[in-house]
Amino acid sequence: MVSTPRVSILALNYPPEPTGISPYIGSFARGLRTRGIPVRVYTAHPHYPEWEFREGYGQWSRHERIDEITVTRFRHYIPRTQDGIQRLLSEISFGLRLAFAHWGRPDVIVLVSPALFATSIATIRARLSRRKPAVVIWVQDIYSLGVIETGTGGRTVARVMKSVESATLRAASGVVVIHSRFSSYITDTLGVDPERVQMVRNWTHLEPLPAPDVDRVRTRHGWGAAEIVVLHAGNMGAKQGLENVVEAARLADARKLPVRFVLLGNGSKREHLEKLAERVARLQFIDPLNDGDFQDAIASADVLLVNEKPGVSEMAVPSKLTSYFSTGRPVLAATDPLGTTAGEIMAAQAGVVVTPGDPQALVDTALALGNDPGQCRMYGSNGQRYRDEVLGEKAAIDRYAEWLRSLAEKRARPVSARLPNNQGGDA
Image 1 (cartoon, helix red, strand yellow):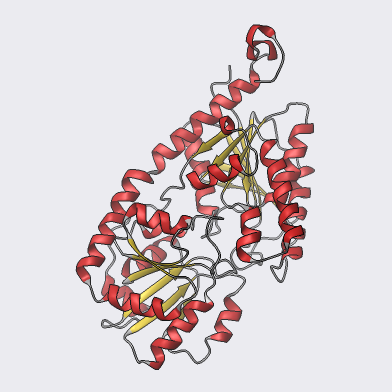
Image 2 (tube, rainbow, N blue to C red; image 1 turned 90 degrees about the horizontal axis):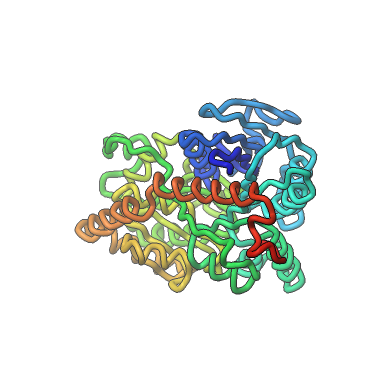
C-alpha cells in the first residue's frame, strides 16, 4: 500500500511564469507538498508569454528550490515565430530533454498537456521504464480541437493530431480534465476509457488581497475617472483573436466614446497588434505585472474582457476567468455563444456574451455595461460567489491528491490482487 506516493510533475510551464497554466501547476505542487506528498518538478526555463528566456535563465540544466519544492529546469528550443512546425519542434525538444533526464523514483508522474508532443515522448519513456510509475495526464487544452478551431493546418494535420492525442491519452493510467465538455470529447471522440477520466476544475490561484485604492491604481495607469476601462489580461496569441479589440478601439476613436480598451500581458501576437494599433488612441498596452499589481489592475477596471477568435469554441477554458471571478467586476466575452467559455460565464451568471469578431457589438456592449453600475455589481457578485462555491482551491487539490494516492496504490498492488478470481485481463 502506498499511502504517501512520490509524485513528479513534468510540465513545460511553471512559476515564475505569471500567466496561462503556470500558476495552476505551481499551486498544485505547493498543495501536494502541504498535504505531505513528496513532489519534484521537471520543467523548462521561464519563457512564456514573451517566448524568450527570462533574464538569469537559459542554462542547459538548472536546479532550484521554489516554495520548498525541488525544481529542475531544462533548456529547450524556443521558436522566434509560433507557427505549427516551430511549435512542434519546440515541444519535441522539451520532450527529448525529459526523455533523457533522471526522474528519481516516483510512484506517479503527472504530465501536463500542453505540451502534447512532449507529453507523448515522456509517456513512452515512463512505459518503458522498469518501475512503471502511474502516468497521469492533466489536459488543459485539447490539441485536436485547437487545430480545427484556430485553422492552423488542414485535414491531414488534424487527423495526425487527433491520432497522437488519442494514443497518448489512452496510454495513461488516468486523465484529468478541467471541464465536463473536455471529458465528453476525450471519451466519446478520442476513445479514452471513462473510468480513467477525472474532472478537476481549475481553481482560483491568486491569494486574497485587500481591496485596492481604485483611484490610485487608475491614476497610475492613466485611466480617467470618466472612462469605461475594458481590460483583457493574459496571453496575446492566435487563439485570442485580439485584432477584434483593436478594431473596437478604432471605432471608439471615430465616435469619440468614453471607452478605453486595455491589453495587459504579452504573447506572440503583441508586436503585430501594436503595429496594427499605431494610431488608435483608445487602446493601451500594459506589460505583465506582478501578482499584487495584476490583481489591483483587474479589480480597478470597469469591465473584464475575454476575446476569442471566431471558430474557437471547445478547445480550452480561458485560465483568466478564475482571476476575473475574484474581482467583483463584470465579464464581457466576445466568443461563440454555444462554446465552453460562454457556458462557463453563463453558469456563473457573471457577465455578457457577444458574437466574436464583431467590434461594433463589443463597443456597444462595453458602453452599455459600463453605464449600468447595478448590473455590474450583480455580475461581479455572482462571479465571486461562483469562485467560492465551485472554484475553491482546497477542495480541488484534496480531490486531486486523493486520486493520485489511489492510482499509486493500484500500481503497487500485485497483479493477482487486481484480477477477479485470478482470471485474465488488466484492472
